[in-house]
Image (cartoon, rainbow, N blue to C red):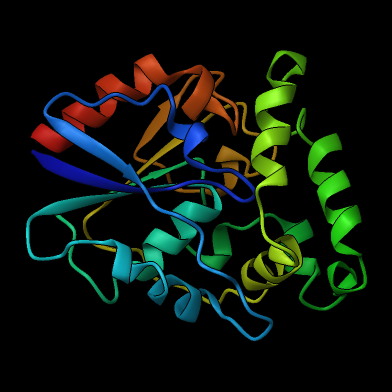
Length: 214
């Protein structure tokens, strides 16, 4: 059976992919390696490689921050295709407020406790409603100490300018965090939010199966 190695979004775990079911494929959600202070997107991406069996054909899939990591992984391993969901492929596609943090790094002054608090209170912004609070909190609370500070810094300092040739980008038109107006998506999901991998999974499953068979 084909394997799809999937990386969740910032502060989330395998539960993010709970509704992703692909025919004739196994979705293997990767664990977060420990991020370190001086990690770049490239160095952090390499830490995922030991979890991937590259001896057989495989696919990559990533949501949000996970999609950015997948973009970098393609420089070191060769998936059949890379499926990018609700993400940015290059620094150019990042929103202005993330780019600004490179020159005004206030995220480095914020405590880890406050980063987690911001993640919780910002859940509505990325598309997680009240009904999803227990699951969302459960994922956030599983993150290791300083995870948020180091990973946000990795995103802020990301320099990538190129897109993998085998990447397919799926994006929602109601993504408030990474607006579809600033990314070059191959497929747009009407009214899909940044969290559409959870709430629009049926459409995504059908689209992913189509992409894999083409």
